[in-house]
Image 1 (cartoon, rainbow, N blue to C red):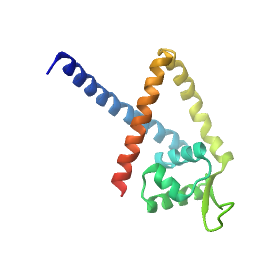
Image 2: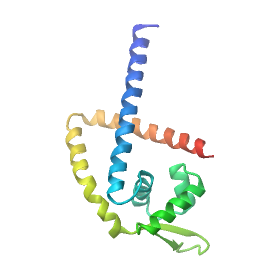
Image 3: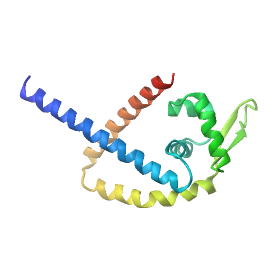
Image 4: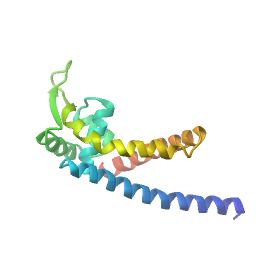
Length: 155
């Protein structure tokens, strides 16, 4: 193994270690935010998907989350019971049902992200635009890989 190969192996191991730590603190952060509103982390992240994508079908949510369709149905039942979403008829296909956010209820969560958003902006000051672009590319690739891994586990 060359010195370059050793350095790459060491760097990949560091990346795996830091990734595990990041994953853990991310889950704990979202669990804490969700708990403030009587949600779990999956429910809170589903609201995030609906906020980013707009109204979606349960099938769309299953594809985006990698969750089994039956799990998505239970998830939506809980979110609807808590007042965060409502099921509405699709505007052009009355056989389909869309899940849409209750924006007023969702606004209650926004306050928990304001400090964190400021922290992110401040932390990004340490990095050049090119470095941030590399991080964006890396996280985009890893998100797709993790979404595919989740789908494999639920299929």
